[in-house]
Structure formats: C-alpha cells, structure tokens
Length: 188
Ligand SMILES: *[C@@H]1O[C@H](CO)[C@@H](O)[C@H](O)[C@H]1NC(C)=O
Ligand SMILES: *[C@@H]1O[C@H](CO)[C@@H](O)[C@H](O)[C@H]1NC(C)=O
Ligand SMILES: *[C@@H]1O[C@H](CO)[C@@H](O)[C@H](O)[C@H]1NC(C)=O
Ligand SMILES: *[C@@H]1O[C@H](CO)[C@@H](O)[C@H](O)[C@H]1NC(C)=O
Ligand SMILES: *[C@@H]1O[C@H](CO)[C@@H](O)[C@H](O)[C@H]1NC(C)=O
Ligand SMILES: *[C@@H]1O[C@H](CO)[C@@H](O)[C@H](O)[C@H]1NC(C)=O
Image (cartoon, rainbow, N blue to C red; front, side):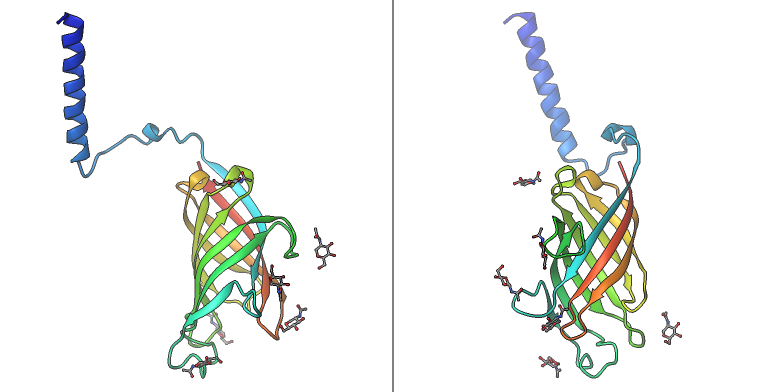
C-alpha cells in the first residue's frame, strides 16, 4: 500500500470516529455564524383570512365544547379546528396565498375572546411551504387585535414579530368572517 492510500484510510477512520462521537453528543455550543444566517430582515405580509364556519364548505369546525359552552355568554370552552383560506384580497376568489391551520378556543368567561394557536403556511413562490406560528389572545369584538408571531420555518426560521387582525366582514346569520391580517416579522 502506498503512503497516500494509508493516509487516506487513516483520515476516513478518524472521520468516522468523529462522526460516531458527534452522533452521541447531546449538546454542542456553536457560533451563530455557523448557520450562515445572513442579515436579519423585516417582512410585512398582508392578506385576508376566510373563517367559513357555516354551510357545506366550512373550513372551521367545532370539535369540542364544555358543559357550559351553550349557556355561557362567551361560548366558553368552544374549541374549533380550522384550515382557513388566505387570499391576497378580501374576496374568497382572489389569489390564494396560503392556509391558516390550527385551532381557536373560547377562553374568556366574561369578554368574548379566543385563544388562537395556528400555523400559517404560505404558497406564494418565495415563501412556498414556509410557516409562521402565531399565538395570541383574540378579543374578536375589538376593531384591532394583536397576535404574537412565536416562530417559523423555511424562510421564516427564527421568526418573531406580531400580527394585527381586523374583521372586515361578518355574516351575523352563520358566523362566517373575513379578517384582514397585517403581519410584521423579523427573520433571517
Ligand atoms: C362548496 O364547494 C363546491 C365545490 O367547490 C361548490 O361547487 C359549491 O358551490 C360550494 N358551496 C357553497 C355554499 O359555497
Ligand atoms: C350545544 O349546542 C350544540 C349546537 O347547537 C349541540 O350540538 C350540543 O349538543 C349542545 N351541547 C350541550 C352540552 O348541550
Ligand atoms: C370573484 O367573484 C365575484 C363575485 O362574487 C366576481 O364578480 C368576480 O369576477 C370574481 N373574480 C374572479 C377573479 O373570478
Ligand atoms: C371586559 O369587558 C368589560 C365590560 O365590557 C370591560 O370593562 C373590560 O375592560 C374588558 N376586559 C378586557 C380584558 O378586555
Ligand atoms: C410549492 O411547492 C409545491 C411542492 O413542494 C409545488 O408543487 C408547487 O408547485 C410550489 N408552488 C410554487 C408557487 O412555487
Ligand atoms: C350569510 O349567511 C346566510 C346563511 O348561510 C346566507 O344565506 C347569506 O347569503 C349570507 N350573507 C352574506 C352577505 O354572505
């Protein structure tokens, strides 16, 4: 065997040992630069959220309730799972930009307010498949509600920020609503 072959073999063995050791390491301190994150960006997203609760094509459906939901003034304990359409304009046939998938639950005994726990998944080219996780208190009767961007995936890794939600249409007969969202998100 030539010296080069032996050296190559040794390097391979050393590397496998290193990899084996690495796979058994639970925690490692890394410089933030190791992820090549680049500069932090601020992105504003503007879209409309279609909460369709009535009719055959509902995208937000009640899955659970509490013993007092029907008698409580705020529907306390009502839990709804949604897969709501997000569009660029207020009409439901306007260009689709993604879906809001998650749940909301009536969580205030006195004032109508929902706890929102949602992943917003986008399909517009640059953001295709990227998600924002948005959590917050949503007092739906207030003209403007602020929700928290707690994180994200894809282009939104390390995201933080906030969303402002404004109801622009409410069908009082069946509860369908269209909500305008302004999201300000810091990410890399
Ligand atoms: C429900 O969706 C179907 C299929 O997209 C459509 O034909 C129908 O008009 C919709 N119904 C309502 C009430 O929107
Ligand atoms: C509350 O109302 C809903 C729909 O009106 C009904 O399906 C449900 O059974 C009621 N729940 C209780 C605990 O009465
Ligand atoms: C969307 O629907 C409205 C009526 O509901 C119609 O006037 C408009 O032409 C539709 N737009 C598109 C892009 O289909
Ligand atoms: C709840 O409603 C009451 C009466 O409408 C109001 O005075 C109070 O400020 C509200 N509380 C919150 C936290 O919104
Ligand atoms: C988004 O990604 C999906 C699957 O990864 C792909 O099928 C689709 O064409 C993409 N859409 C856009 C607008 O890039
Ligand atoms: C509100 O909902 C009712 C019941 O589903 C429906 O008949 C009516 O057309 C809706 N109104 C609007 C403005 O969408």
